[in-house]
Figure (tube, helix red, strand yellow):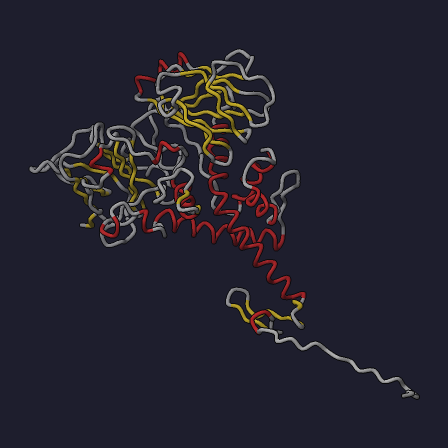
Length: 480
């Protein structure tokens, strides 16, 4: 057949059966960002801009929450510098114990601490410890590096010479050292001494110096000194985080976290100067993330954190995993990690181990028997059963909800413990009162402040098996 004139063409289109759930309508409504518009699946410029801003806020929230351990460490190291401490040279000591003047996350006021920064950027650092101490070294990202003192199997409280080395160090490591390797340059070392009586011996024998150099250590007493070691809760948080990212090697930290940080503008080797919508997003994210952190710290979402189950308001500050890495059953308990680092400092496996007659154990409560937030305008009591399962002592301390530091009352200890003059009931139990004013007559009084929210930490020093088996149960704070 011969075709004349216009050639006829037959056009065929494929007609697959397309499931509705893989396509996008031209208009989609969301509660978070409102209406989103598309043209045959392609987002409009306005929609793209709106969602990008939303994603910037979302990623910044994640950076804030996951970055709390990092900025907490940064704040502690910078806090030491603010009172004159220098890396590899200065030890700050609470010679008259901790008190309300220093802003620290939930410290205790019963044992002295010696604290210092180790920076291995230029050379390995030697620590010569000839005292019985309980301590650790944590890196700039608040990851556990190793135990020092009683928790180290090569030391066991007898002392030893430690060598702190960066992972990249290629030099020869001499024999005779307890070697601890770290992925970051800056590292934090808190040591707990047994008592104030041990301070003189520690200061006399402790040495710290770069390998191959001569010891040159100075000591600063920070008892009574007003200074801050707590990270920011507003947009300043991101600037604190940027300082860490800029200083530490790119090989340190988690690549996923570094990727998220880069998406909000925090990247090694690049300036961090957010303006306009970028800055607005970071401010919004900080406000949201701060609420989340406080929620997890004061009323944990993980109900397994509650030591006595639903019957009591006391929870474990490090959650239910019994892991210093907050890992269990093949997953990372992110909210547990957030809660811990928002309230406390120091990471080591020692904090989660159960010892019969050794170590220590902590519980926290933020609410009373009615599950209402603790209020300094009210009076609360709690009665501890007789014969507490411990070899040393128990302690109650109160902390400020805002700063998570010692509540600034007139009580030097910030609480009450069993080393003092304990008033016992006829059956041997002990009733402790939490109130702004001292009760009439003999009492075990923990002072609070009017118009001030607070939370309570209960510590057991050298608890025995009966404590770990939860056979000796403390009650809730009862509002009078």
